[in-house]
Image (cartoon, rainbow, N blue to C red; front, side, top):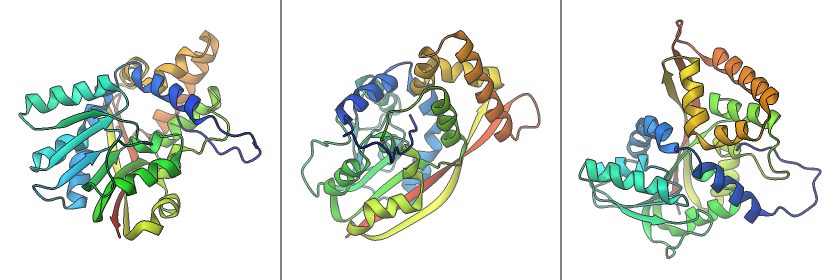
Length: 278
C-alpha cells in the first residue's frame, strides 16, 4: 500500500514484518484479474527500452507477467520473478497459451537470486515500487544488470489515480510508520536519487494507463474482490468504516472519470523510466 514518510519516527523499521504484510495483501484475491488489463504498459515499456531479440531479460515483481510476455514476444530470453507463486503460475499459463518461452522463478525483489552483471535488461511494471526497502530493491536491480545494460520501470505517480487511491486508503487504514511511499518511485527526483550514481543516463516520460470498466459498481466489485490491497483495506474495517471508504473511493473515481456516461474511463498517470547502466 502507499505509505508516507514518518520523519518523526526514530524507531527502526521492521522491514520483515512490513514485507510479510504486503505479501499477504498481494497474495489475497487474484491480482491477475486486474493485472492482465495492464498488458499495454508492458508492451510500451519494451518499445521504450528498444529491446532486441536474444537479449536476456529479468522481470522483477512480475505479477502475472505482463512485461515478461511482451519481452518474450520480441524473442528475448526472459526470466519472470515474483514472491507470490500463484501469480507466476498465471504468467506460466499465459505464456503456454501463446506458446512463449518463460523461465519462472519465485524471488524476493530485495534479494534477487542471480549473479552480478547477469542480465541485458531488467524490468518491472507496478511491482518493485511496492518493496518496503526502496534503496535495497534499487541496488538489486542495478546489481544484476550488466554494465551498459538497461533498467526499465513503470511506476504509478503520486498525483495519478492509483497514487490517489492509495492515499485515500491510507486515510482509513494507516500504513506502516516510517516506510517511504511507493509512489515516490513515480517521481523523477526519487529515481535520480536511487539510480543516478550507477547510470549513464535516465530518461523518464509521463504516461497514462486508462482503466475501463462497466460502471463504478463494476470497478469496486473487481477491486474489492481481486486487488489485494483494496480487499485487505475493506477487510480491516467495520461496516461503518467500509461505507466511508467506499464513499471516498467513489468520489475519487468521479473526479478522474472522463467517460461522460455511466461507464468508467479513468486515466491513471505513471512514470515510464529507462535507465542506462554505466
